Image 1: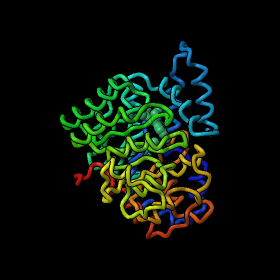
Image 2: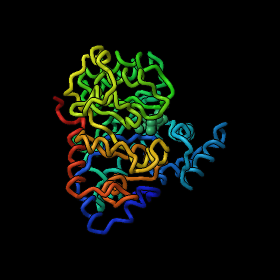
Image 3: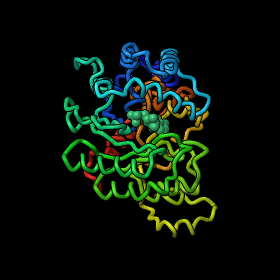
Image 4: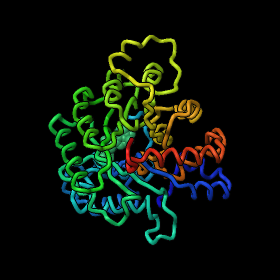
Length: 362
Ligand code: IMP
Ligand code: ZN
């Protein structure tokens, strides 16, 4: 497994060996990991070495590789997206996609490659945005109970591209390939989510799980969140800036604040029984500076309100984290962690397993 650094590493190194063994032994579900954001550093360096310097992107690739090696420092969340073109340049061939897919699956499920180290997680839903073709489910090494694919729709996609990717996902699912869900991701400033909803609902109707990156930045509007929530996703990614009004409106058991929202409520015919699982990515939020500290993190709100959550890595390559690192931040004492009890951490891990799309959905 790649070395971790930053807040996850600090939390992990503060734990006693017994706590680390406890965390390692917990069955964990990794449900929010992006393929191209999770490539082990060793693999991306190998691809960079083989990269032909004929392209105009050579300098961009070299700069990004330097950043990844020394530790990415982001001023704001939008800086994250500027890392991706260089990574895509290195993973643009079928051969490279197969290489990184193998490497990412191995890093989560068989870190040393020979089964001598326990997997980072018991179950992995890896997500990726189809580019020209989809090759992901070629990988048959890991059983269906251990790994599955989520097809990511990028917010920048045209209506036609969204339609095509959703059709592809449905078709693959119907052919018995291991596609279990649809995700909406990409730069939070782009795309009109109102035009995505009919496609997302078609995917749901076809039996695919639905997860969406939502309210990830202050630039996401209420209309944007409402459009996505109107599809009733099974899980929500980040949801950092979801307003109290929307939380009260949509989620069961969360008390309504003073604000008036009955018209929205009527408009969306909301049942209070909707309780989507929140995909929480602590290192990602801290390093993208959408959350200032663990103390201020919205995970506290969801824990307090007994709302389902799952702990995830998001993009282990730039955020230099791991499943163990993220769970360490639950158990470590403040300010390195949330200082939760082992019982609470075990309960959270179970909530994550329960939120997998693999389960027959009710
Ligand atoms: P890929 O889908 O396997 O190519 O993984 C990388 C892509 O995932 C990026 O280009 C983004 O579109 C998306 N992504 C990764 N992390 C985030 C995030 O935190 N927010 C929104 N999109 C993200
Ligand atoms: Zn993400």
